[in-house]
Length: 209
Image (cartoon, rainbow, N blue to C red; front, top):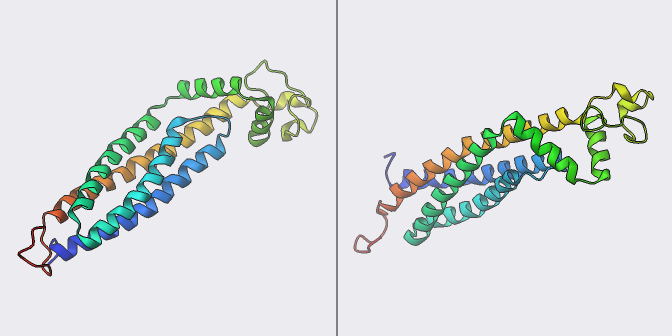
């Protein structure tokens, strides 16, 4: 019946296969974030990438431990998965807690510390000129920017708002994605506890599991 040994085993296998998919999603989201905001060093995004890689390796351990019903492997899998759940949930909360002012402050800090080549690259990507109003707006300062091709660079918008919006979008996507999938990891912990406490009906009843 469902809820028995075989059903729990298959459910745990399916959940670990889902974790493999989730790990690739987390890695893709983090890579997308680093690609969109190229000069901004957001350590939270890097932490999400690390969680994705770690979840992939952990899901491999879970699949092997589930297939063999190995108590030691399942124990370490359960403990590490719970730690990963706490870490990923915390990272998701940190991403969603960034307000607009903090995003602008981060963008300004990274702009100041980046090179001229980075500035020009961002200006091309976001089709903007200068970081804030008052920055020089001319074809020499903003080369290859579409809004400057008409020789009227004053019509170009500032980069501050566009970079801040990009940072905000990346943090929202990363935060909600991590938040949603972190709860599936809590389900995995519960299923592992249930599975470890069940006896394999095909095993020798005299063997302690």
